Image (tube, rainbow, N blue to C red; front, side, top):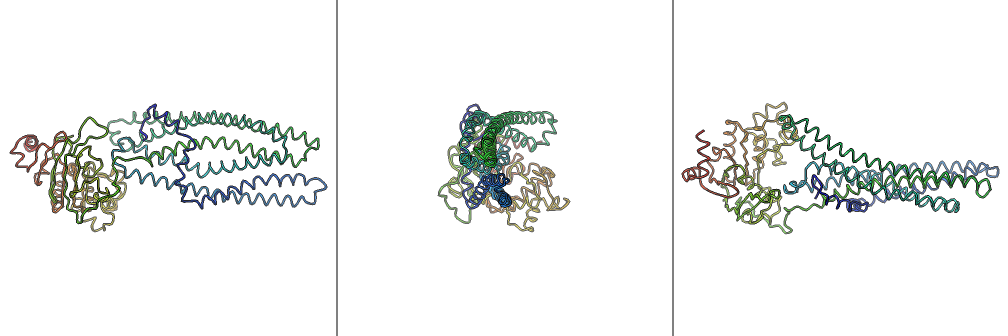
Length: 594
């Protein structure tokens, strides 16, 4: 899988694999549209055939100027106009079918990649930057769109014109065609030699664009932090440097392609002029008629133009092949967290019992730092458990395990007695409501942000959830109330307002398991008290896990689990743990005596 930077081995591997044959990866997306492809091919063959018929009509017109054929000249002109009309209609049909096919296929590719990426576990995004995935969905699909809707069509049309034109040139004049064929090696050699260089520079250009996109995404999403630390200038310089590197690679690629185009076109048209000179001598010697010479020259120009077009399109095909390969990496990406082939069914109604059975885990990016060590914990249905301890103790990791964002290295997490690895993730996650430490707010209305917890909820249910989360009052003060747009990532809301919306979202979900990760850390004392009361009501008859640093918020929990360095070091009620002494007693003394 592609990372934000490439090692030499990665680059070497990519260089060997990026060939035009990689475009075969588009076949699965093209198969559903066989009818559209056939119509496009029919229009393409028709226009190519008409292009080859046109010189025959021109020959008749030119030879019609002679006295013995003057009476047929009007017919020849009419036939030529008729062919031109059919050619125009065929070209319009080809454009419509091919462009529609390209847009349809690219829409399917983008949807397929998004559907795959949105379900990938956090472990995948430890290795791949989100901005880079977005770059693949936008930049690379745009390259492929140009190939499907333009380059491939033009390439096939020019290939047909090249082959048909060569045959008709042979039938017109074997001698002049032999002279033309002497030019072909002079055209093919620079295409092959310089084409390899173009492929390497195209790969480098795409890599630099992806890197700059990842950098832009990261800094723009943290724009306030960048500004607060007056880091605009270094950020601008970093992005500018990456953009310039991408431009330098593109400039080199454009330069090589320009040189290749110059060489090919010069060799082709110089050869055509030489052939025309030889043909003029044959006309003077009555070996061929003026119309035949004009016909041959038009075919030669068509063939030369086809070769020139193919030389340009070859570079586009190479770039698109690289883009196809990079997209295929995302589509074929394997996730370490997968659903079982034959999932187990959970009994209804769900009870909400959770159990950690000797669970050990470390994050892939930190293999030498265990996040959980042989953790054992049983949580009864309807029980409220508070997880406390210093930062880095593993509290939030417990939620990562429960939601199966990661799988344990050893041990198992059981939900109603079933290992969650044996249940479809969508099934058991529907039974959970999660409020993360950093609330996620989407760029839509406040109402839709709350309704995210249950899309089929009514407006009245949304309002009731907001009231329970102490969010109703401030939402009604917004310019458009619940319909107010809250900005990207909720930039128009305060931290406490974001948390209350996230809590309202969880309340609306009404799931048997409630996970609160520092859910009230950004609230003022009055709002925190209101939300605590709402959580207490919500926690009744449902399993609740609460992570909190402020011990005042967890004193009423059925049990408090004290964690340190990934291990459970103590369990009990607030009073029991204070009496016992140890880590919890020290934390309580520190907080309650301040």
